[in-house]
Amino acid sequence: MPDTVGREQRRVDDVTTLDGDLVVAADGARSVVRTRVWGDEPRDTGVVAIRGVLETPPGSPLDQMHEFWGDGMLFGVGPNRLPHRTGTNWYAATRRGEDTPAGALAWAREAYGGFPDLVRATLADADPGRTVVNTILESRPARELVRDRYVLVGDAAHAMSPNLGRGACEAMVDAIVLGEALNEHGPQGARHYEKARLRAGQRTRTAATMARRLALSARAGRAVVRVAARWGGKD
Image (cartoon, rainbow, N blue to C red):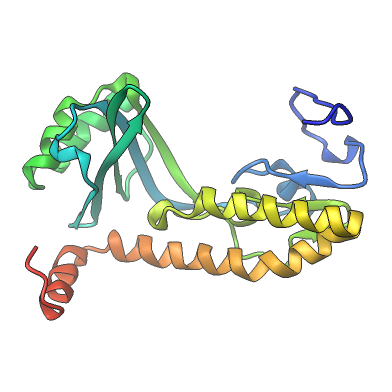
């Protein structure tokens, strides 16, 4: 960061006290700026995500991406390749209240008992100390990303269900587009950013909602099997 950039590390409850020509709100799904300036809070989807990491040897079945749908539940595993070691990310989602990691794991080991061996083995090896449990929040539809001197980016603009894996991607696109617009147009570049990113971010948020609803529908597993069979799939 250039020397002209000042850093502050403190909790901000009143965003109107912040200095600057622009206040860029990159403060997440529970954005203080969006709540204070837009009067808008995220909505609870009623879905909880249980996520964790495992250390696994190279060549493990967990070295590949797998996702399973059925009975209103979802479970996925995928490689997490870090320097000098191989790991696995795993995640589960269902309509359920938030719980402690230990409580959520105990519940999941029983609830996912009818899922394939890979799922049951992953949950058996999961460690509560390396597991997090989060309620999935979504932003409400936004009609503007700029109001006065405040600009929304990332989850503050379009917090979405994680089912498309696009949340962080959309945030990075927001940052690049906003940065380029401000470099070219100064503070007025915020409006150029809004024009470029408003509909795109909201479309992705809506698509992620649809994907979540499909994946967690009671008939999701059977629907996927029918589609796969229609197109010649065997698994």
